[in-house]
Length: 117
Figure 1 (cartoon, helix red, strand yellow):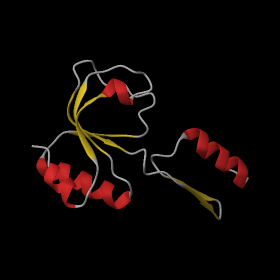
Figure 2: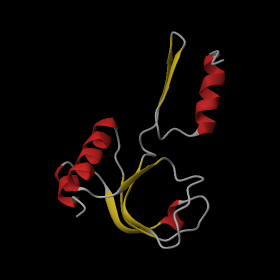
Figure 3: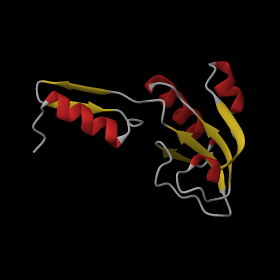
Figure 4: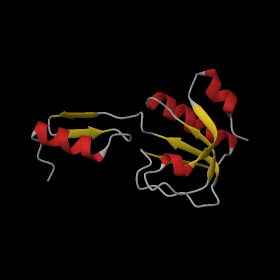
């Protein structure tokens, strides 16, 4: 059973019965039982732990670009990571968070003049 009360307790946004076609850049696919939208790393950790503890099947998805769910849908929870974005570069090390778009990361890398080879 999806632990909606856990998400309600700390105000993590979620939606039930979501059309994957509405979310995906491909505009195809069936209904997902629920989508959870953590806004930071702490909420992501909490979400994954709650889903693991409840035994619910889940999948982690970035911005839903190039993501295709089957027409039969997904019996489980899609954890949407688009809000967890960010970029930092220090002393030759680069950190790009999971919801960051590739275009944004490339622009930031170019501006930072970081050698990633």
